Image (cartoon, rainbow, N blue to C red; front, top):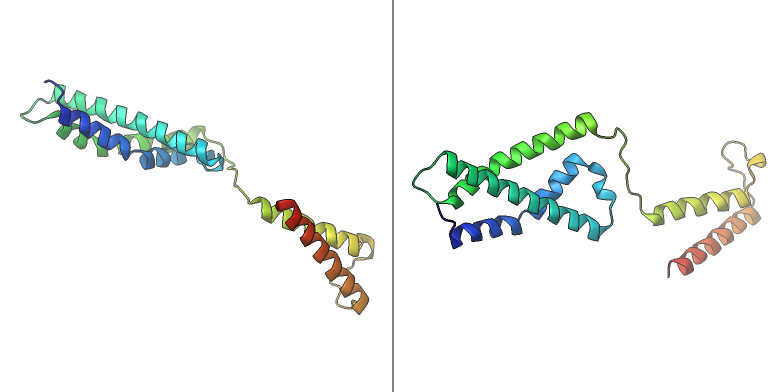
Length: 163
């Protein structure tokens, strides 16, 4: 059975929409993909989508050879898509279950880490650990003003550093 322009256009159509399936497959098999930089994540998704499309086209072609009917190749490729999605997700789930890491890295915004670090450093500078016992509810007005001033200075430093 010769491959027609309609068959090629069906493969291109599937390839153009396969990036999201590629990303879902990557997330299923390699959860740490979400920590990659955005361009690398998009490139990996496109590559996984292209590989998915190639596998679906091969499966569609194999179906058209082993089960010849009076229909075109593009019908076989669209029929093979759900099967390929199911099989690849099952493979990725099994891969993650048996070969995957048990700990997953989670991305935390730099601003949150910097704010926590600034707060800890400010608290250590104003109220040394050896003088800290439980919750201090009896701060003098002067101590409160020092805390406000130190926090304001640290916030201004952080804002200048982020610009």
